[in-house]
Amino acid sequence: MRQYYQKRSQKPVDFDLEVRVLVCSEFVQKMLKLGFRIIACSVGKRHLHALVELVSEYHEKRRVIGKCEQKASHAVRL
Image (cartoon, rainbow, N blue to C red):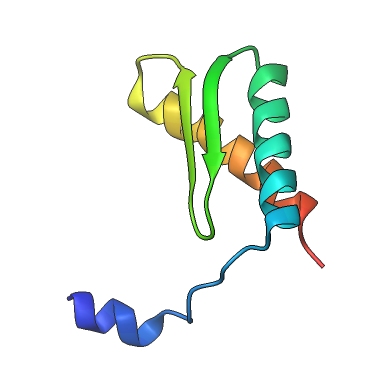
């Protein structure tokens, strides 16, 4: 199954420092706007990691994180 998805996926994208700063900033701002406490956020070349105090319900967590990811993604689109 892994090979199937590897064939279908595009090559990984590495983010420059200025893009990573913008992604982190937008993600954190949206999380705060939604009323959640964010303790730490870090963006590497390919991944964002955040330590956030969220609701305990799984689907609500996914919804909140998705909204923050969407905000960060839209901020860096060409």
